[in-house]
Amino acid sequence: QVQLVESGGGSVQAGGSLRLACATSGYIASHYCMGWFRQTPGKEREGVASFYNRDGVAVHTYYADAVKGRFTISRDNSKNIAYLQMNNLVPEDTSMYYCSADLSSSCGARVQLGHLKSGDFDVWGQGTQVTVSS
Image (tube, rainbow, N blue to C red):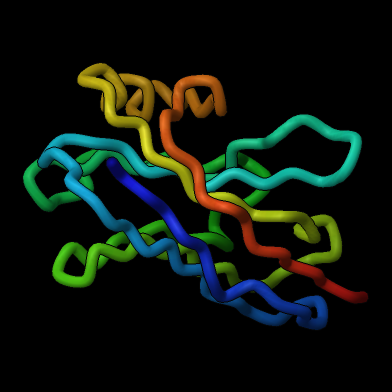
């Protein structure tokens, strides 16, 4: 069974950077998708970034417009850790951030089309809080 554990959240000032990490344990196939989502109280969970991994290569990546050019999703396959590098943070990025895995065979097509919906993801971490002050 796949398990995900996030870390790296914290408090920064606007313009600062954070790198979130998502440690993966358990068996995961060579074709899968990883996603980062965020959620603030009273709002729906919002997709931030995702990638489709095929045989160790991120074939497709997707970024929400709100983070494009500032956030970078990646994965270190040797360590089984996915990352979300967040630069030039703004107060609107304040949220609980979750990593997730979509293990279905069709996840790659969704990433390629820019479909990032929480309902498509099978496994979730516990979340890590990011707070950006102005």
